[in-house]
Length: 386
Image (cartoon, rainbow, N blue to C red; front, side):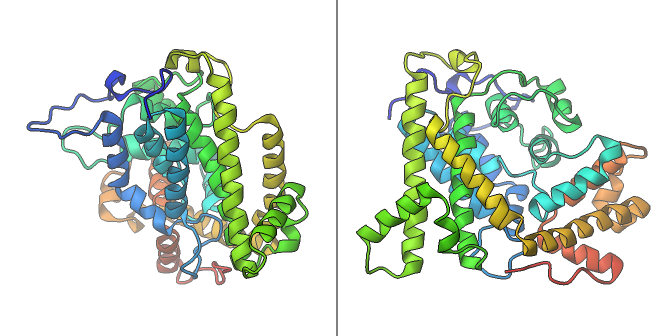
């Protein structure tokens, strides 16, 4: 599809934080394609395969992890970007990179790091993701970080909207390479955010059903899901129940995608520049009002029935304990970290604690459990409940 006038254009990128002087042919990729590939090739991206999405350190092979979730977000994001005439590569880069900053054990791990880092400026997974990509992940000889374009860093910082109060990690990047945090981001960033909502709203249902934490009777409490399931039954009356439920999830994704496309097109009608998008003063890419209401009901339902399920809460408490104990151990004896991390340890606070948090945040679920067992001789039992 032809690029829309309000789309981000890699040929007009505001550039990268550090000048790059690479000899020889660079190939046909655009600047946003390079960003996407740098994220995919990063170690921090590969680690997402063993980080919690819904279920902590799942034993089953069929449950989603942060990696599979990020890939699914990117798939939905590219569909939306293509239909809206946006830059697919920038959208994909933002979708693939949006969860890089999640620590092990998902939100349970993040809560533990927030508490441990209270004296050192706190912890935020979104800011940590940008810090990881812009500072910690450094495979190049001529600059620190992946040196992503301004548009990619801006989108990662603001995909959920303008940032009113940046925590220390994001503020450090913003001071070095100003990201205009108070303004609305590109449509590509807005699309990445709603693609994330669509992916986890529906795929978490799929995993919840697979694990037995949700069942059909639960879903039928939501009128719009009940209506959709009745349509599935009418279309496929002889299909097994589990296949019907998977079809329900697919159908719901399609409904959400179509609603976002229609609503966003109406919002950007008449716009002819990305500057108008940034200056609109509101979110332009998203659900219609009616669908947004239903989506909020779905989120509330998922928190009540899945995310705050008693078994989930019990497992999350054990996971938080692992992260808290690791943080204390490394503060008391930093030499318990690998040699290269010890060599770079800052001498004073808050930098010392931030360095320790960087190390822990990069861990996978499995590695965190191994380190807890190595240091303390044991780790909590029952850290996986599926």
